[in-house]
Image (cartoon, rainbow, N blue to C red; front, side, top):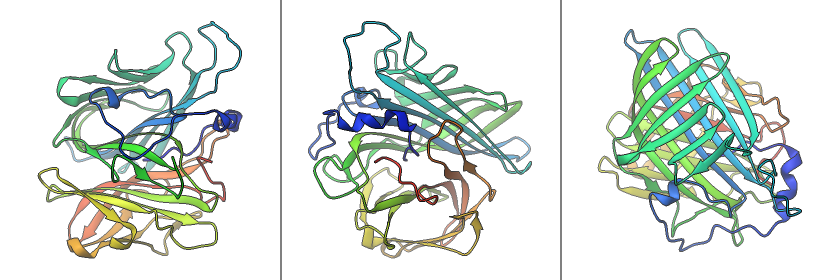
Length: 342
């Protein structure tokens, strides 16, 4: 769902007059699946759970972040820093009990990284998400530790998260995002030498402001249940303790119809198990839907600690059991005391 933060050298971008995520936004597809360079921050976020023919389990994450930089002098060079692109690629090898990740940080430059509606593509060097008719998407990433090539096909249509065109994150004008999800994508392809199949989740958000000063971080869940329904839930933690009332979520039924969930319609309760400061076991409840789930990680250590100075976070493959069974991803930020997206 959310960016853990780009390097501090780009922090000055907040002073520029970027467009704001406002209610009543008129979405246009497929155009809105791609770049929005008048907004400060944008990401395309892929996570999934797959198995090979022998039942070997993998979780994968491939993320493309764009951070806009306010214009300076009138420099016509292709190397002028207008957008910075950060990429994260991670692999959870459940059987091998390994968590691997790599990162890339590039300026757009002469085609080095970018997002293009005309090309139907988002990329960062040799990592890419390429779109074809029917909202099919092909992911490619080659890293020193692993490689993947995956074909993704929607099993149901995309969902616009939030209400009235925005996912409101805090009080105030523009303290929101435009947020689109593909909640269930059928996956087939390869991870290293393994031929894999499974499901994926894709998020695309664009905005210029999100967190308020008293919001410390968030806990975000994508949940794909065996009955063909999905949940997206997140809660914002406040600096003084407690949960912010802007926490919310979405339930997607078997037919793809979305229902917005307000903060008082669900609960996300951490258990005692920890990886460092991160609570890695949770109880997820949506009483009105009869949902009561235990969330457990595939591996305890699925923490990304970026080398480029940005804020670390935990994000990894998880299993759900209880009222139903399912798989998904869990993201947790702000547990080191640093608030991203200021």
